[in-house]
Image (cartoon, rainbow over all chains, first blue to last red; front, side):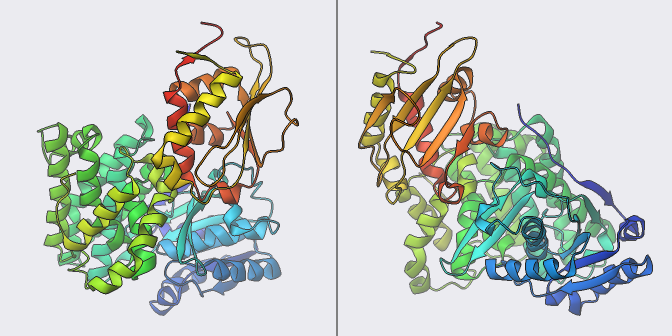
Length: 387
Length: 137
């Protein structure tokens, strides 16, 4: 027995106009300064004001949102008493919106207590709308919340089924202005979600199709979206692929590349999508030595390789490298500009954090501390995995 | 040799296997918190049982079948019917998924336990290594 969680999703051209149909009086818009500067938050605010909403905007969310930030947002919510929380942005504002919503509804909880093992009892005060402005996070449809603990310099995987959004508005126009590098990083994030969602040990019949479809579309469309930002067909398919992958991995979990990528991002300052996708080919090769079946099946299903077994899985890993290289992303930490001393200074903490990241439990192959150390070394140098 | 579940011998064998596991030792090196596993009666096993597993800094210093839940104090209690425990030990049910679906109920400091997912997985892996004799078999 397992379950599948999804918000109502409105997608495609003019999906944003659905804001005119929600009923309420006060909306707290949770976003970041970049989204405000680009005028994307205004598009949301204008539509809500037009149907009579009073608005407050919390735009303090930083990349990799920190616990004190969401606590400040929850304080604003407690004072404003919104009946809707509206998250607008990439993964960071959307995760922050979820956390602010939970803490607004349940002020008795600490952020670290938001777990799937308790009943939260949400939707007594407000409901949640998510509006992605990047094509990668999938946070618009997942119940996961990733917050950073600034004291321990660690990302925490939190969440509960109840904090899945009520409504996701997946409007490609909201992501159409992404610059090349952001398009590349977030697109590879979507690919990592799709591949890890398919290869996770918690994958199901309900998630496989979503993940496979999303992976195929990212391989097909991401180069076009990066090379020509005005290609709205590519942009739209990437935007939808990101949400499909989110539905998939959001219900089957991500895996080892996320466990390693979370701490890489936190310790070395890499954007989330670049960090997790950088790890992905290495973790695919590592898992392929003992459990290649799922990756090989995905490779066959999306037309990357019909070889099966370890060869099929490793061909998928190479296809990920080829795509990342084609769109100009780094294939190693050396290429990402990380110096050796900086890497070695944080290596042991990254090993410990990855080992205890919640995403590690769904890996098809468990890694010892020594193996994780070798994996990080391989990611640093760009060496394929042979162990 | 097989060990009847639930029994004093079974939980002591699990404790022994954990003490042999380098992987558990490294993943739980800072862990402090004992567990009680409550086996609730069902059609296949119409009795209650309480298995105590001491866990401290990557080792399991003691383990025992208890006469009642409050015989020994423990930081965590995981409760489930006998049939659910059998699925976990057989590897047919991921205990974390089981807890998410409320098939197993966990009491204790969740914030702490969420920081040791690998250690939890190692305990389950060791459960599967205990040669188990099922009372209804």
